[in-house]
Length: 412
Length: 144
Image (cartoon, rainbow over all chains, first blue to last red; front, side):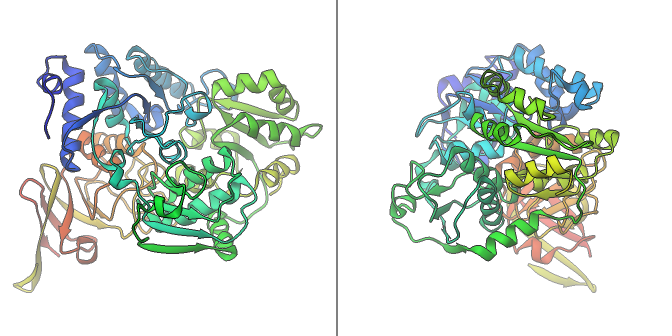
């Protein structure tokens, strides 16, 4: 790799240990992927912001950067954490995790991190523009920001995002380069997609087949919503490692099918039809049974529109005895929901808006065992994918309306 | 290249160094991609992803051979944490390394190789004793 004089100074330790260690990680990564140089990034979104992910090893690494005088060179937002920092106790999270999370969050803040603790920073004003080079972690947000907004990021893991924040650069390879942003697989959607959950089922089915390739969708209506694209992004990045996709006529790098493929022929053509939709839904409903303990909406973190719909559906109803309803969202979105009266309606119905965290990145096995929870219900393909492996919880998957009905009736 | 030697099949594979170093351990082979978040319990090393071909097996001390990574970007720190907890793999081998796994191996300082010929996923079996020398770009089956 060819480094600028400034980058070489960083690598030589002239800017101190944190910057040197960061540059070593980035150079090593650049060499793996044959990058020729570093490029500046304007923003970082930090995965490994939850202690469930960072662990003791990751926390110590971040703290070591603090004690050695490190400071982020670019605005850096923190991904979802391991507890709701305000209502962790009533939600049933252990005090130990709260303390560990506070330690990690504080360390990131000392480096200049913005503690928004959300996986949907794009719902709270973090909206990089077309062609902007960034370094984002959080698999669902990466797929969203690359595809829907057209900004450019690779799949940053915790240590590489930390390194990008400390130096302000990343190696130039992968999705930063135009040549790697063209479509590889053509997915013909031949079944009407009605709700957000259907987009999750589509993404889950395609992600398994696409792996890390770039899918191009046709047959998706141009009035598809941000919430639906959020579900598509999250599911593609759960069953596979898709970081970029295009929707012809919708996403900015896909005005036409030809543009999306850069004039090349698709390597593969898949058809997503009625039977594929049913197959995908069935693969996420891995367990049989009826009784519901917890209903989770907001994976990835809910938008204000989604919370508005939930409030409208729940108005005048009440969640069944013994059932918890969590709507997970970013803190500013919760404040917004309160202003709109949505939060009051949800709380009156027996639900909660939970911030900073989510069931995937929190010690949910502990909460489930403490509260004797037996089954989870969600409209998120991502959560339905991770929950059984993460906390051995039987999971049911269905539309938002069906999930809320399950919350009210206590059965799925 | 696979050669027959004293009735014990011995194989030497050549590939690319992703993260340098040497390791010796039994192989654990998956035909499916692996995600460390929700896929592996980093306190015990047990594979927990429901329906995964390695479900219920343990990665501790193994040379983990799989096509590529998938899913959560939390995987990098979880690889690090599993190694720090003493239940991580001793080395990893991929067909084509994906960034989250590569970063995990860099920070955990375990040898990692990819672009290996012939295809290790087809030819290496669970329990084969392997010597991985990422610096030399070789993987040797020392005992089937």
